[in-house]
Figure 1 (spheres, rainbow, N blue to C red):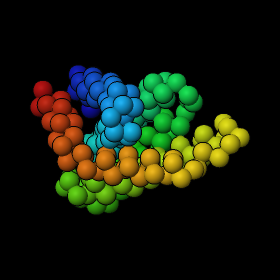
Figure 2: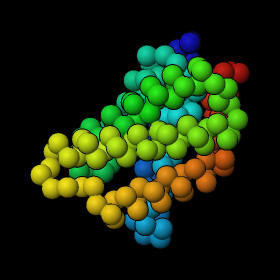
Figure 3: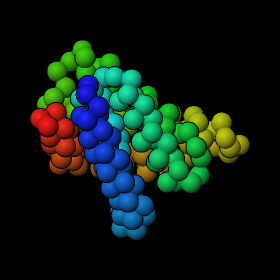
Length: 167
């Protein structure tokens, strides 16, 4: 991958990361209780677009930025997005994953993996049980909301990545 193209992908990833964090911080905490996980959609789409070490590092950086944005623990989002990237990159080599239905299935798998990773890592940091009924409901709402909005968000990310390839 050329450096100019990689810089554009990094720019778009950081732009979508900032949008996702802003949406999660504002809408997620005020109106809806949960917001769609735009960052997970970005990481899944990135894994389908580019299967390289630099893209994997970019997925990790998106997770670290999300960890810093939450300000609670450093690591759960980074590990979750890295695992989601790896799993998506592996699965998308085995199946044709460009259809929106396939992307939604990959998002479902990645979302469940993200929730499990988050519970496991936060459980290591704290002594109390984070796996409560409220956490399960919130995670399920976020997964459903992410999958419902994925057909609207994925084309925006895809257009950004395609414009990087054409230039």
